[in-house]
Amino acid sequence: GFCRILELKIIKALFGDKYFDLYANIGLKALRGSISLFGEDHNYTKMRPELKDVDPDDAFSSVPYEKGLNFLIYLENLIGGEKVMNPLLKEYCSTFKNDVVTAEKFRDFFLSYLKGKVDDKVLGGIEWEKWWYTTGMPYKANKFDTSLMDECVEAASKCKEGVIVEGSVVKGWSTAQTVIFLDKLEDIQMEDFKAAEKGGEQKEKAKFQELLIGLDKKCGFSKSRNSEILFRWYKLGIRSGLESVFPDAIKFVLSQGRMKFVRPLYRLLFASPEGKEKALETFKANKDIYHSIAAKMIAKDLKLSS
Image 1 (tube, rainbow, N blue to C red):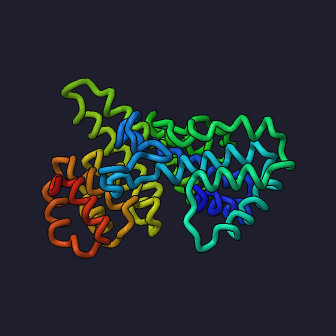
Image 2 (cartoon, helix red, strand yellow):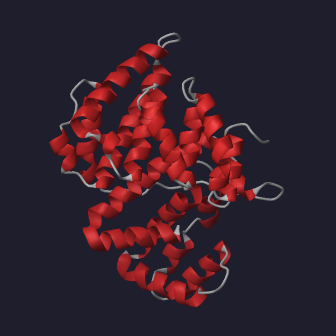
């Protein structure tokens, strides 16, 4: 959570308050994806999972990053905002540099640093263990400004109705806003596919293929050079069975080493009739290009190891 909140504070300093909230919302989408993968009540969806007698690499996901971020945002809002939290974070980094820090150490430091600066009743009301050990989404939800994402979410919803967003509109968005648009489109896609009656899945896929082809003609997502955008575009295309996407998606997983990109794409390829054999063939021929942990986890995703 610390690396995430410092990342977002830098973004806020560069682009303004609303971008802090925009990126926090993107993180919540990633968190929902990880929770969906594990299951809402799974141990690995805790901020502090129990890792005794398990391979800790199996627990790797966005969960500690995003739940940690949301806890720190909650704490910042609770104690009086940035004017209190920023000096605390600076002192925290100075105090524990070159050291190993447990959650308990942070809690003790936090309470000690704020003694006399924040009301004892406020500090005493923090439910540390519920934040640490609650499964699923964060124990309490923070409120974020959505003004920068509302237009993008609406544009994605209109795409489903056949009103495809103009390329000139997308060109005026930031990368983060484009990510929000594609993430919302994926939510719509997954909901539609799940709701399709038995035997109607192919019809839904064909409708989404048509939508994606029209969208690409106007917005050129397939020609993007931004990995965040391409990653989301390939997810939409693979799930829809859009043939033109598969070769590019394969090239992408061979050009990337980040698990946040390669693992979801390998999983989608493996789950698709059009991509299963290609996913296996590609990984088997190229597994040595990945970090050892990434290679191990992709192998598990592809049922090549237990």
